[in-house]
Length: 186
Length: 79
Image 1 (cartoon, rainbow over the protein chains, first blue to last red):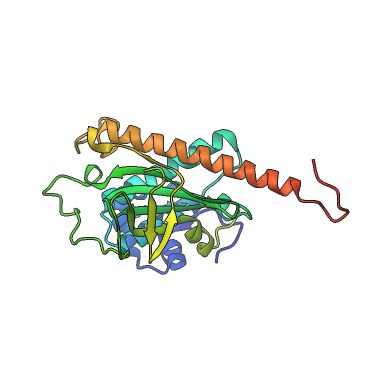
Image 2: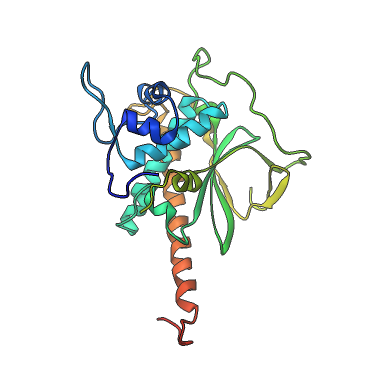
């Protein structure tokens, strides 16, 4: 948990909050997956400073990395999340990631990688069943064939019987849950 | 995609709506706007973010309406 008044975090603080070694966060920054909102490293002696949104991005990115998702696909996920925040902000000016995802009654946002090797997002609420959006082919998000960041091994399937026309989720990451776990409330 | 059944951890859930964005239109290449994807893919991701935002706002409005329709402690509905 963090202080509700804290608005920026150093690399050390971010790594401590996320319970991850600093080099994993540095890797995501150097890959351009997470771009420090407040200050990027620009040489010896400079330090990165991160926003609450960055911490959510790290949380989502680290979870997807654990599941074997390439950095380029994670970059696409975070790109959509940033666009999502910006678009909502036009209708709900106070909307901010990650705090607004943690308020009571807020819809639950998930990232899904389907068995069909496509990227989806889902939104659900206590009153409405999940609606799923997307379907962007992962092959169009990863680098060229010689990119070492391509899938190193097949994603593990979790479903049992699938008939034609059904979608089998291989990876599901709850963005709202990560926001709540980080304690980065509104 | 509409009406597809989605499975996760052995639990089948009905997908009410899934807008399949056909990303086969663009081949992976360096985008001109600084993103690592083709302009077509960047456009698809932008569209996806907009669609998610619209649905999020709709769900928030729905939640607010539901809350307003619940009688308060004196049995009156809030307008």
